[in-house]
Length: 401
Ligand code: PMP
Ligand code: GLU
Image (cartoon, rainbow, N blue to C red; front, side, top):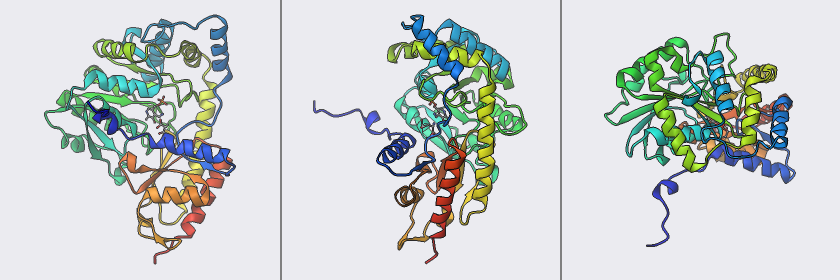
């Protein structure tokens, strides 16, 4: 047999958010003054009490394999957090500690998808969802949110995408890339759809702590006993605790689903790094003031950035209520003239911004919206000001002929 590769692997697109960020970092090393609006990664250091817990774990010899699903102590800490923050009862046995939110989602799709099963993904979506669904043998089915409704979808729109093969719907709340947050009434509408069609809801709540409205965050599974049974709640520490490199995520689900996910993980990676698990216990059980401090900084940046973007020509930006992204419609610039060529896509705009203005942004073709650009405001105010000045200058160069 020839050295052919797996069709599934050949069909996977590499993560463009990570690629753009890597490129921006490389250009910085080469001496360019790059402003990075790329990957959603808090610019803050991991809080000291969390780092200290990791050092203690090393010194105390906490360096061995743990249970594949995570230490009991950490699963207890997650269980307590689910109760305290999300009003959800997940026993430690219903929790799986994963290598970042990404492995949580990977486990979910491997646990629930049979070859050809369809998973409804509201668009715009975080770019890894379709790839993870395909890797598990599933088929992504996209339902496009409308700008007028903050790019959120309703049960009516979702229902049109249902077929006998529909297995699940993914809900990203707060949303990456739009920053939109579903109200309780909107969640109830979708919950009715999930229960009626007897499908899973994969509720990705990675940004649950980064909410800037006065409303309390509502976890999908908390809506009712029936909804709880249909939901797999996914989250992690990467964003809320500035712990992207530590790789700690988790899922809460029914015991049946948790057992399958734990079995899958026991063969793929075993447990999450034991030192990172010890640090995660401190993150969840220790003081939470750093989380609030970071949230407040993100909120200041969000307000500043939104105001500035509103005043710029040609572009339209949805007002984000959570997470740390601005999702910007560049449609009006498509076809405009920039340095004697016509702009054809957001990908081309992103290229020009990086090459000519030293500004890294994420073009959203891999999020299902090829005329949109995402900016992360998980970077300092100084960088944000500098980057926005550059984008404004770029827009000033555009003309209609
Ligand atoms: N879900 C969403 C919506 C995300 O934006 C991300 C990005 N990091 C993840 C999950 C995965 O997070 P992690 O870095 O913990 O794997
Ligand atoms: N989730 C972040 C983002 O959307 C980090 C990069 C990634 O994992 O895709 O930028």
